[in-house]
Image 1: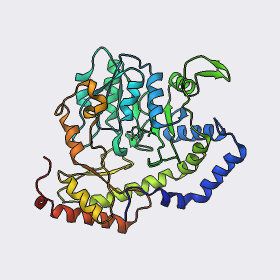
Image 2 (image 1 turned 45 degrees about the vertical axis):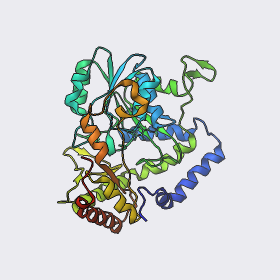
Image 3 (image 1 turned 120 degrees about the vertical axis):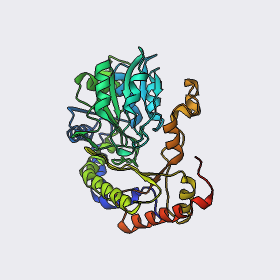
Image 4 (image 1 turned 90 degrees about the horizontal axis):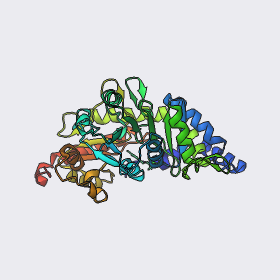
Length: 375
Ligand SMILES: *Cc1c(COP(=O)(O)O)cnc(C)c1O
Protein backbone atom coordinates (compact mmCIF):
# COMPACT_ATOMS: atom_id res chain seq x y z
CA UNK A 1 0.00 0.00 0.00
CA UNK A 2 1.33 3.46 -0.91
CA UNK A 3 -0.63 6.40 0.54
CA UNK A 4 -0.76 9.88 -0.99
CA UNK A 5 0.97 11.28 2.11
CA UNK A 6 2.30 9.49 5.21
CA UNK A 7 2.21 11.68 8.31
CA UNK A 8 2.90 8.72 10.61
CA UNK A 9 6.24 8.05 8.92
CA UNK A 10 7.16 11.70 9.40
CA UNK A 11 6.26 11.62 13.09
CA UNK A 12 8.37 8.49 13.61
CA UNK A 13 11.38 10.33 12.21
CA UNK A 14 11.10 13.29 14.65
CA UNK A 15 9.18 11.78 17.57
CA UNK A 16 11.62 12.62 20.38
CA UNK A 17 11.91 16.28 19.42
CA UNK A 18 8.14 16.67 18.97
CA UNK A 19 7.29 14.93 22.23
CA UNK A 20 9.84 17.07 24.07
CA UNK A 21 8.47 20.30 22.60
CA UNK A 22 4.86 19.38 23.42
CA UNK A 23 5.76 18.33 26.94
CA UNK A 24 7.51 21.66 27.58
CA UNK A 25 4.37 23.57 26.59
CA UNK A 26 2.23 21.35 28.81
CA UNK A 27 4.54 22.03 31.74
CA UNK A 28 4.57 25.79 31.14
CA UNK A 29 0.82 25.85 30.40
CA UNK A 30 1.11 29.01 28.29
CA UNK A 31 -1.39 27.65 25.77
CA UNK A 32 -2.59 30.99 24.38
CA UNK A 33 -0.06 33.40 22.83
CA UNK A 34 2.72 31.52 24.63
CA UNK A 35 6.44 31.89 24.20
CA UNK A 36 6.64 29.33 21.36
CA UNK A 37 4.29 31.47 19.24
CA UNK A 38 6.52 34.54 19.13
CA UNK A 39 9.65 32.40 18.67
CA UNK A 40 8.08 30.58 15.74
CA UNK A 41 6.93 33.90 14.26
CA UNK A 42 10.49 35.23 14.39
CA UNK A 43 11.91 32.06 12.88
CA UNK A 44 9.32 31.88 10.10
CA UNK A 45 9.76 35.57 9.21
CA UNK A 46 13.51 34.96 8.94
CA UNK A 47 12.86 31.88 6.81
CA UNK A 48 10.71 33.89 4.38
CA UNK A 49 12.84 37.03 4.52
CA UNK A 50 10.05 39.32 5.76
CA UNK A 51 10.18 41.72 8.69
CA UNK A 52 7.04 40.25 10.25
CA UNK A 53 5.17 36.98 10.62
CA UNK A 54 1.87 36.76 12.47
CA UNK A 55 0.64 33.34 13.58
CA UNK A 56 -3.05 32.67 13.01
CA UNK A 57 -5.45 29.76 13.45
CA UNK A 58 -5.48 28.49 9.82
CA UNK A 59 -4.52 29.30 6.26
CA UNK A 60 -8.08 30.41 5.67
CA UNK A 61 -7.86 32.93 8.52
CA UNK A 62 -4.48 34.08 7.18
CA UNK A 63 -6.16 34.98 3.86
CA UNK A 64 -9.16 36.53 5.60
CA UNK A 65 -7.12 38.75 7.93
CA UNK A 66 -4.50 39.67 5.31
CA UNK A 67 -7.19 40.80 2.87
CA UNK A 68 -8.94 42.70 5.65
CA UNK A 69 -5.66 44.40 6.61
CA UNK A 70 -5.21 45.35 2.94
CA UNK A 71 -8.51 47.21 3.17
CA UNK A 72 -10.76 44.81 1.26
CA UNK A 73 -14.39 45.44 2.16
CA UNK A 74 -17.97 45.23 0.89
CA UNK A 75 -18.33 45.46 -2.88
CA UNK A 76 -14.60 45.20 -3.58
CA UNK A 77 -13.46 42.90 -6.35
CA UNK A 78 -10.51 40.57 -5.90
CA UNK A 79 -8.98 38.86 -8.91
CA UNK A 80 -7.95 35.27 -8.27
CA UNK A 81 -7.67 31.78 -9.71
CA UNK A 82 -10.67 29.44 -9.91
CA UNK A 83 -8.29 26.47 -9.82
CA UNK A 84 -7.60 26.39 -6.10
CA UNK A 85 -9.03 25.28 -2.78
CA UNK A 86 -12.28 27.00 -1.79
CA UNK A 87 -10.63 28.97 1.05
CA UNK A 88 -9.02 31.40 -1.40
CA UNK A 89 -12.45 32.69 -2.45
CA UNK A 90 -14.11 32.25 0.96
CA UNK A 91 -11.75 34.82 2.44
CA UNK A 92 -12.98 37.42 -0.07
CA UNK A 93 -16.61 36.57 0.76
CA UNK A 94 -16.08 36.95 4.53
CA UNK A 95 -15.31 40.62 3.89
CA UNK A 96 -18.29 41.20 1.61
CA UNK A 97 -16.04 41.27 -1.43
CA UNK A 98 -16.48 39.52 -4.74
CA UNK A 99 -13.98 37.06 -6.18
CA UNK A 100 -13.34 37.60 -9.90
CA UNK A 101 -12.01 34.41 -11.42
CA UNK A 102 -9.69 34.48 -14.39
CA UNK A 103 -8.36 31.47 -16.25
CA UNK A 104 -5.11 29.65 -15.52
CA UNK A 105 -2.10 28.98 -17.70
CA UNK A 106 -2.44 25.52 -19.33
CA UNK A 107 1.13 24.53 -18.43
CA UNK A 108 1.56 25.87 -14.88
CA UNK A 109 -2.09 25.83 -13.70
CA UNK A 110 -1.32 29.21 -12.06
CA UNK A 111 -3.03 32.54 -12.85
CA UNK A 112 -2.49 33.69 -16.44
CA UNK A 113 -1.00 37.17 -15.93
CA UNK A 114 -2.00 38.29 -19.44
CA UNK A 115 -5.69 37.91 -18.49
CA UNK A 116 -5.50 40.13 -15.39
CA UNK A 117 -5.59 43.54 -17.02
CA UNK A 118 -8.88 42.79 -18.86
CA UNK A 119 -10.55 41.75 -15.60
CA UNK A 120 -9.76 45.00 -13.77
CA UNK A 121 -12.73 47.33 -13.11
CA UNK A 122 -13.04 50.44 -10.94
CA UNK A 123 -14.03 48.14 -8.04
CA UNK A 124 -10.91 45.96 -8.25
CA UNK A 125 -8.76 46.26 -5.11
CA UNK A 126 -6.48 43.23 -5.01
CA UNK A 127 -5.01 40.21 -6.77
CA UNK A 128 -4.61 36.88 -4.98
CA UNK A 129 -2.20 34.64 -6.90
CA UNK A 130 -2.08 31.02 -5.70
CA UNK A 131 1.25 29.19 -5.81
CA UNK A 132 -0.47 25.97 -6.78
CA UNK A 133 1.18 22.62 -5.98
CA UNK A 134 4.15 24.53 -4.52
CA UNK A 135 5.07 26.17 -7.80
CA UNK A 136 5.37 29.97 -7.66
CA UNK A 137 2.96 32.00 -9.80
CA UNK A 138 4.35 34.52 -12.33
CA UNK A 139 4.97 37.21 -9.71
CA UNK A 140 6.96 39.66 -11.87
CA UNK A 141 4.12 40.44 -14.30
CA UNK A 142 1.55 40.22 -11.48
CA UNK A 143 3.40 42.74 -9.29
CA UNK A 144 3.99 44.94 -12.29
CA UNK A 145 0.27 45.17 -13.10
CA UNK A 146 -0.64 45.61 -9.43
CA UNK A 147 1.79 48.49 -8.91
CA UNK A 148 0.70 50.23 -12.11
CA UNK A 149 -2.99 49.89 -11.25
CA UNK A 150 -2.73 50.54 -7.51
CA UNK A 151 -3.83 47.06 -6.42
CA UNK A 152 -2.76 45.06 -3.38
CA UNK A 153 -1.27 41.59 -3.84
CA UNK A 154 -1.95 38.89 -1.25
CA UNK A 155 -0.16 35.64 -2.06
CA UNK A 156 -1.88 32.36 -1.27
CA UNK A 157 1.26 30.43 -0.39
CA UNK A 158 -0.64 27.69 1.46
CA UNK A 159 1.04 25.02 -0.71
CA UNK A 160 4.38 26.73 -1.19
CA UNK A 161 6.48 26.90 2.02
CA UNK A 162 10.03 27.74 0.97
CA UNK A 163 9.33 27.95 -2.77
CA UNK A 164 11.58 30.47 -4.52
CA UNK A 165 10.81 32.75 -7.45
CA UNK A 166 13.70 34.68 -8.99
CA UNK A 167 15.61 34.68 -5.72
CA UNK A 168 12.69 35.60 -3.48
CA UNK A 169 10.67 33.39 -1.21
CA UNK A 170 7.03 32.76 -2.14
CA UNK A 171 4.82 34.75 0.22
CA UNK A 172 7.42 37.50 0.64
CA UNK A 173 6.91 39.12 -2.77
CA UNK A 174 3.44 40.69 -2.54
CA UNK A 175 2.03 43.00 0.14
CA UNK A 176 1.31 39.95 2.29
CA UNK A 177 1.74 36.20 2.03
CA UNK A 178 -0.53 33.57 3.56
CA UNK A 179 0.51 30.13 4.71
CA UNK A 180 -1.44 27.11 5.89
CA UNK A 181 0.02 24.58 8.30
CA UNK A 182 -2.81 22.10 7.75
CA UNK A 183 -1.28 18.72 8.71
CA UNK A 184 -0.70 17.48 5.15
CA UNK A 185 0.95 20.68 3.91
CA UNK A 186 4.74 20.68 3.42
CA UNK A 187 5.07 22.28 6.86
CA UNK A 188 2.17 20.84 8.81
CA UNK A 189 0.94 21.25 12.37
CA UNK A 190 -0.91 18.58 14.38
CA UNK A 191 -4.17 20.40 13.84
CA UNK A 192 -5.10 23.70 12.17
CA UNK A 193 -2.65 26.60 12.00
CA UNK A 194 -1.59 29.38 9.63
CA UNK A 195 0.62 32.45 9.20
CA UNK A 196 0.61 35.84 7.53
CA UNK A 197 4.01 37.21 6.49
CA UNK A 198 4.61 40.80 5.45
CA UNK A 199 7.22 43.52 5.44
CA UNK A 200 4.56 46.25 5.57
CA UNK A 201 4.38 47.40 9.22
CA UNK A 202 0.78 48.64 8.90
CA UNK A 203 -0.52 45.37 7.46
CA UNK A 204 1.39 43.42 10.11
CA UNK A 205 0.00 45.57 12.91
CA UNK A 206 -3.55 45.23 11.62
CA UNK A 207 -3.38 41.42 11.29
CA UNK A 208 -1.92 41.21 14.82
CA UNK A 209 -4.83 43.28 16.13
CA UNK A 210 -7.54 41.38 14.23
CA UNK A 211 -6.34 37.90 15.16
CA UNK A 212 -6.75 38.61 18.87
CA UNK A 213 -10.14 40.30 19.33
CA UNK A 214 -8.85 43.67 18.14
CA UNK A 215 -7.27 44.33 21.49
CA UNK A 216 -4.35 46.57 22.32
CA UNK A 217 -4.49 45.60 25.99
CA UNK A 218 -6.20 42.77 27.89
CA UNK A 219 -9.58 44.54 27.94
CA UNK A 220 -9.12 47.41 25.54
CA UNK A 221 -10.41 46.75 22.04
CA UNK A 222 -9.69 49.21 19.24
CA UNK A 223 -11.25 47.05 16.51
CA UNK A 224 -13.88 44.34 16.25
CA UNK A 225 -11.52 41.44 15.78
CA UNK A 226 -11.60 37.67 15.79
CA UNK A 227 -10.36 34.75 17.82
CA UNK A 228 -7.91 33.59 15.16
CA UNK A 229 -4.71 32.97 17.13
CA UNK A 230 -2.06 30.33 16.51
CA UNK A 231 -2.07 27.70 19.31
CA UNK A 232 1.11 27.56 21.38
CA UNK A 233 1.15 23.75 21.08
CA UNK A 234 1.02 23.99 17.29
CA UNK A 235 3.77 26.63 17.28
CA UNK A 236 5.98 24.29 19.34
CA UNK A 237 5.40 21.47 16.84
CA UNK A 238 6.01 23.77 13.89
CA UNK A 239 9.31 25.06 15.34
CA UNK A 240 10.65 21.49 15.41
CA UNK A 241 9.43 20.85 11.87
CA UNK A 242 10.71 24.13 10.41
CA UNK A 243 14.23 22.91 11.16
CA UNK A 244 13.56 19.89 8.88
CA UNK A 245 11.77 21.76 6.10
CA UNK A 246 14.69 22.38 3.76
CA UNK A 247 15.73 18.75 3.97
CA UNK A 248 12.15 17.60 3.30
CA UNK A 249 11.86 20.00 0.37
CA UNK A 250 15.08 18.60 -1.04
CA UNK A 251 13.62 15.08 -0.76
CA UNK A 252 10.43 16.16 -2.51
CA UNK A 253 12.40 17.72 -5.36
CA UNK A 254 14.50 14.58 -5.69
CA UNK A 255 11.36 12.42 -5.87
CA UNK A 256 9.80 14.76 -8.45
CA UNK A 257 12.94 14.46 -10.57
CA UNK A 258 12.71 10.66 -10.37
CA UNK A 259 9.07 10.74 -11.47
CA UNK A 260 10.00 13.02 -14.38
CA UNK A 261 12.73 10.66 -15.54
CA UNK A 262 10.59 7.55 -15.16
CA UNK A 263 7.64 9.10 -16.97
CA UNK A 264 9.59 10.82 -19.73
CA UNK A 265 8.32 9.97 -23.23
CA UNK A 266 5.05 8.68 -21.81
CA UNK A 267 1.71 10.01 -23.07
CA UNK A 268 1.20 11.94 -19.86
CA UNK A 269 1.99 15.57 -19.07
CA UNK A 270 4.33 15.95 -16.08
CA UNK A 271 4.88 19.37 -14.49
CA UNK A 272 8.38 20.56 -15.36
CA UNK A 273 10.64 22.70 -13.21
CA UNK A 274 10.92 26.27 -14.47
CA UNK A 275 14.02 28.35 -14.84
CA UNK A 276 14.55 30.79 -11.98
CA UNK A 277 11.96 29.12 -9.76
CA UNK A 278 12.18 26.44 -7.13
CA UNK A 279 8.96 24.49 -6.74
CA UNK A 280 8.52 22.67 -3.43
CA UNK A 281 6.26 19.95 -4.88
CA UNK A 282 3.49 20.00 -2.32
CA UNK A 283 1.80 17.80 -4.90
CA UNK A 284 3.20 15.72 -7.76
CA UNK A 285 0.67 16.33 -10.49
CA UNK A 286 0.46 14.66 -13.88
CA UNK A 287 -2.18 15.29 -16.52
CA UNK A 288 -3.94 12.82 -18.76
CA UNK A 289 -7.36 12.70 -20.42
CA UNK A 290 -7.46 9.08 -19.17
CA UNK A 291 -7.31 10.12 -15.54
CA UNK A 292 -10.07 7.86 -14.20
CA UNK A 293 -8.55 4.83 -15.88
CA UNK A 294 -5.09 5.57 -14.44
CA UNK A 295 -6.50 6.35 -11.02
CA UNK A 296 -8.45 3.08 -10.86
CA UNK A 297 -5.51 1.06 -12.12
CA UNK A 298 -3.30 2.49 -9.35
CA UNK A 299 -5.97 1.97 -6.73
CA UNK A 300 -6.19 -1.74 -7.65
CA UNK A 301 -2.44 -1.95 -6.87
CA UNK A 302 -2.89 -0.27 -3.50
CA UNK A 303 -1.59 3.13 -4.64
CA UNK A 304 -3.60 6.16 -3.48
CA UNK A 305 -3.89 9.26 -5.65
CA UNK A 306 -5.70 12.57 -5.32
CA UNK A 307 -7.43 15.12 -7.54
CA UNK A 308 -6.58 18.76 -6.87
CA UNK A 309 -9.12 19.94 -7.80
CA UNK A 310 -12.06 18.16 -9.49
CA UNK A 311 -14.37 21.21 -9.71
CA UNK A 312 -13.01 24.70 -10.37
CA UNK A 313 -14.48 27.29 -8.01
CA UNK A 314 -16.44 29.16 -10.68
CA UNK A 315 -18.54 26.02 -11.23
CA UNK A 316 -19.04 25.21 -7.54
CA UNK A 317 -22.64 25.43 -6.28
CA UNK A 318 -21.40 27.74 -3.49
CA UNK A 319 -20.40 30.40 -6.02
CA UNK A 320 -23.42 30.04 -8.30
CA UNK A 321 -24.51 33.63 -7.70
CA UNK A 322 -21.37 34.84 -9.47
CA UNK A 323 -23.00 33.49 -12.65
CA UNK A 324 -20.10 31.84 -14.39
CA UNK A 325 -21.06 29.33 -17.09
CA UNK A 326 -19.46 26.05 -17.99
CA UNK A 327 -16.93 26.81 -20.73
CA UNK A 328 -16.23 30.35 -19.44
CA UNK A 329 -12.78 29.44 -18.04
CA UNK A 330 -11.80 26.55 -20.32
CA UNK A 331 -8.22 25.92 -19.18
CA UNK A 332 -9.29 25.62 -15.54
CA UNK A 333 -12.10 23.27 -16.53
CA UNK A 334 -9.79 21.10 -18.63
CA UNK A 335 -7.23 20.98 -15.81
CA UNK A 336 -9.97 19.90 -13.40
CA UNK A 337 -10.75 16.96 -15.72
CA UNK A 338 -7.13 15.90 -16.27
CA UNK A 339 -5.02 16.45 -13.14
CA UNK A 340 -3.95 13.52 -10.98
CA UNK A 341 -1.78 13.81 -7.86
CA UNK A 342 0.67 10.94 -7.34
CA UNK A 343 2.07 10.01 -3.92
CA UNK A 344 4.85 12.37 -2.81
CA UNK A 345 6.27 12.83 0.67
CA UNK A 346 9.85 13.00 1.95
CA UNK A 347 9.87 9.43 3.30
CA UNK A 348 8.75 7.86 -0.01
CA UNK A 349 11.45 5.36 -1.08
CA UNK A 350 13.06 5.01 -4.51
CA UNK A 351 11.42 1.59 -4.85
CA UNK A 352 8.01 3.07 -4.13
CA UNK A 353 8.48 5.87 -6.68
CA UNK A 354 9.47 3.22 -9.21
CA UNK A 355 6.40 1.14 -8.33
CA UNK A 356 4.05 4.13 -8.78
CA UNK A 357 5.65 5.19 -12.07
CA UNK A 358 5.50 1.61 -13.40
CA UNK A 359 1.82 1.38 -12.52
CA UNK A 360 1.16 4.68 -14.34
CA UNK A 361 2.97 3.37 -17.43
CA UNK A 362 0.99 0.11 -17.37
CA UNK A 363 -2.24 2.04 -17.07
CA UNK A 364 -1.34 4.29 -20.01
CA UNK A 365 -0.63 1.23 -22.19
CA UNK A 366 -4.22 0.09 -21.80
CA UNK A 367 -5.75 3.58 -21.65
CA UNK A 368 -6.86 3.73 -25.28
CA UNK A 369 -8.70 0.38 -24.91
CA UNK A 370 -10.57 1.67 -21.90
CA UNK A 371 -12.52 3.97 -24.20
CA UNK A 372 -11.90 7.59 -25.03
CA UNK A 373 -11.03 10.05 -22.29
CA UNK A 374 -13.54 12.70 -21.32
CA UNK A 375 -12.12 15.06 -23.96
C1 LIG B 1 -4.82 24.44 2.34
C2 LIG B 1 -5.13 25.63 1.53
C3 LIG B 1 -5.80 26.75 2.06
C4 LIG B 1 -6.48 26.78 3.40
O1 LIG B 1 -5.68 26.49 4.48
P1 LIG B 1 -6.33 25.94 5.85
O2 LIG B 1 -5.17 25.97 6.78
O3 LIG B 1 -6.84 24.57 5.60
O4 LIG B 1 -7.40 26.88 6.27
C5 LIG B 1 -5.93 27.87 1.25
N1 LIG B 1 -5.47 27.89 -0.01
C6 LIG B 1 -4.86 26.82 -0.56
C7 LIG B 1 -4.36 26.91 -1.96
C8 LIG B 1 -4.68 25.66 0.18
O5 LIG B 1 -4.10 24.60 -0.39
